[in-house]
Structure formats: C-alpha cells, structure tokens
Image (tube, rainbow, N blue to C red; front, top):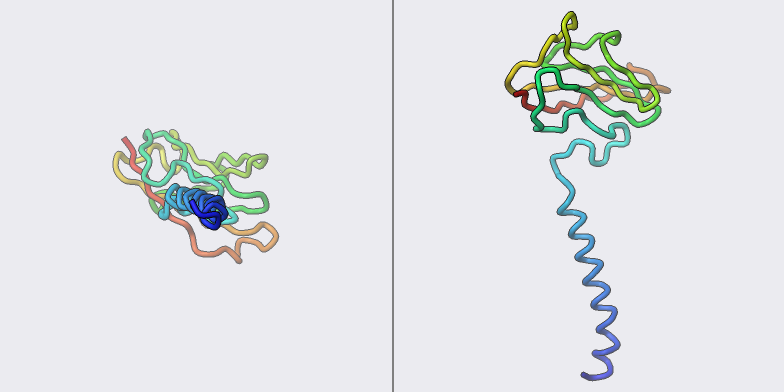
Length: 136
C-alpha cells in the first residue's frame, strides 16, 4: 500500500464511522413523533397509535414552566378531574365513574393538549397538539 494511502486510511475510516453513527441516529428518530423539537412537551400518554384499556391514563408530561388544558374526543377535561403532579409537571386524566368521561370508547380516540408558558399565560397558548390512540 502506498504511504499516502496509509495516511488517508485512518481519517477516511473515522469519517465513515461518524457518518454511520449519524445515519443511525436519524433512522431511529420517528418523523411522526410530535415531541421532536418541542421544548414544552416531554411525553404523551398514551403514545401516538398505542392501544390502551378503557380506563387508561391520557395526558402529557410538560417541561418545567409550562401548563396546559386537556381535551379527549372533543370533551374539555375540567381541572378538578385532572391528576396534576406538579413535581413532574404531568397533566393526566383517568376515566372513572362520575367524571366527564367514565370510560373511553372501544375505537380510535384522540386527545388534544393546549399548552403555554406559565410566565406568559394561557392567552399566549399556541395551536393545540392532537394525537390519537386505540382502546381495546
């Protein structure tokens, strides 16, 4: 092997390895995932297109400093029926007897979160994020 080829071999192998590493990262990212690039939303419950039970939890995990309102299948969930864990900043709803939704319908259901920075207030909320899931 010529000396110049040996000198170029190590950098070329390193560049190829970095390229493969970057490609693996892009292939692992789900382009339909609504949280990619969101600084406010950390997780959806359930995940988009997941299957849950009729009494399953529905909601979001918000980043610190954010607040929100939840709707499920067009029904606004009253704040007193939400499980709000301020330590984790989660807004969760569990259907139950006596609540606005006693159980989720056995079909596709959709939830919607309208969220805003607490410092700016609810009137500065952007468009809501909608995601759907199936109920068995």
